[in-house]
Image (tube, rainbow, N blue to C red; front, side, top):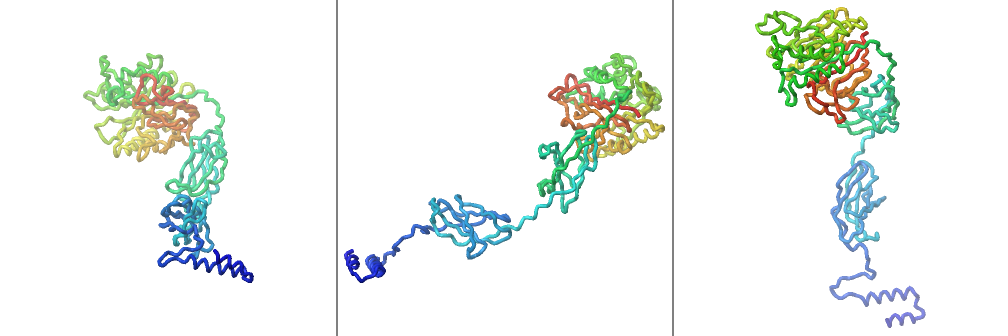
Length: 557
């Protein structure tokens, strides 16, 4: 220090010279001893630790790269330097607190260079940058296809809409959304592999909002939705009340001698009053009955025996009705009363398939029956019963048929039911030469869910008959060509299996039917599945049969 003071006392020494001399003196004074590690005069507080290691990519997209690296003790944050150039020119910087982070806003299919360093909690450098790591973004994502265009109505009925739109290149599937809200909320969704849609179960005279988009085979969205398009169902045309409606029903009673077929069923004697009450509640003008066995009731000991269909007839009339059978013969034998020692003679008998008619409302012109094809002679034979009938209030004639097709669901029996239905169609053509209005009812033992097809349904509708409910294969929604103007309990299945809780689909849809009322072209003001169901969906009281009666009113043309 004495030397410094001496230098400053030299008058002609410049300030710069003094500084230079002073620096030289300090270096000399602080020279390290032999073998010591030299230290700089101003030791840096940064870049004193080892840079983070292990920098690598864990994921890439067309615009992002996700990185991970090993932690460095004492690090407050990590800074990532990223550049598309190997000299790191034009670099951008990202900070991350954990040991992973995603660098965004990159270009697709481009090589990028990365370096990383640790920072103190105040953002100052804790380490130097790491060596350069190189990786690449993914290829550019394909452009989002444009939304389909040209969405419009192609078919309009009171309860259904047909929609169509312009085909889009390479589109595999489309999703149609339709609802009653202008914002597109609470919509129902449908998938189609074609550019047409059949939307059913809609409300007459209602405005709907529809839109369509492209989707993948597994249902993932590809395009945006098209703009909302207003569509509407047509209103129900005003129709005058039918002055003299004809009421018709179909009812499988479950044969009296088939007890213990289902664990929940009860004997005929314990449920027959409920069957009578069900029929009497509607008092149909004509009704097709199935499984009203011609076999003698074991609970009745009267001479000559007593059949189930005779029991039904007599109990209905005892309850105040006026029903008669179009044919009361038990068997097609020379002696129709008993099959014992039968000498075959066509008596028009049809086993348990019988037609009851209300003598106060209708009369019979002629009637008959037809034995249907079978695959197994050991099985119960199946029949069609038919009659030409007059509605007394109008004098109009109509043709009525009733049947009970094969129940077996094994291979080959679907085709048998088809053959049986084709035989019935042939009978109608042969016996209804006057081309009278037709009502064809019965237990077809086939539904829209049966694979490979609902064969008898296809045969009857293919021959020009109409299902008033508009059941279609594989769908609970009624078609737009349903003719029933008012439906009740149509969502309840026609077969109940004696189960306490009713089998049913959602309200407003069609349940599963194996029992049908087919019509030729005519008005059907009402249609009902007759079932006493409480608010919880359970049958009330004794279940009369394993089938529910189905009932309709029609206007004969």
